[in-house]
Image (tube, rainbow, N blue to C red; front, side):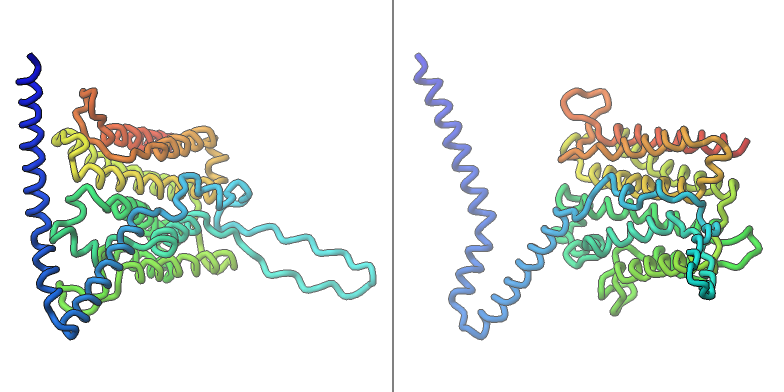
Length: 384
């Protein structure tokens, strides 16, 4: 009685097997044909072609390794800066060390030169650049990333693009911060001169994220993006050295903090709109190849702003104490850190009311808006 049913399934699976065999044979036919052609050539032709294939395999191996290994990724990286040990706002003169009392009657030593508190915001910004381009390879300007997958942009595929999007998100936070350092934090009011080191850092950070050693528009050799970002980090460190010697300015007024918070809130507000647009208009679930780009860009942006906001709490510590903002400031940091706990292996952009495929974009958008609402509340309290 069951024989016809069993025979049916046998025929079905046999047909499927033959179909799969045909597809595999079709996919591998060009390689078999190329192998046959290569085998019949002489050594003068084989040698350069073999060397090129070895180079290509090596480049792809390096590319895959760099995109999949996130060196020193740590959502709690803020603890490395020991911000709690800073007791003075940025730019303020540090107390002079008490000179030792001489018991021999010798002439006391010359008083040490005055020193000022360096900026934690600048330290964290330079550290984030170092994380992006020195501790890790900058993916977006690598040759194979530019070439794409058989000419298709890597961002349009579900493979090997998450780290690049994350790095661009971190870079966005650092870029925004560099603008505020030049325009308001690193000068006294609007009539004072702009610090040259901060100006240089801002200019280098605005450079194109996708530049390799050679380009087509304009045609010719170029300086790759990581070189500009390294120069920006060096300029930031030079500013902090000058600030610690009391030769530069960090203007830690309340209105500057209000403006800084405003700019951050606007920046992540734009990201929330990007997440909303993708979540509302596309419901590809695990098969939405652009959802991971949006998710990891937003994640990287919050990763960067988490450290920068924590550093701003140290640089503006006096303002925060005077306005009784310690509790709400810490809540904002906790909300930002909570968003960094979301690290799904596969990003899904399912229907928000669905139950099979989750909507990670909606979840990330929720956390982004929570952080933004805290920043808006901080601003309103400061503005009273």
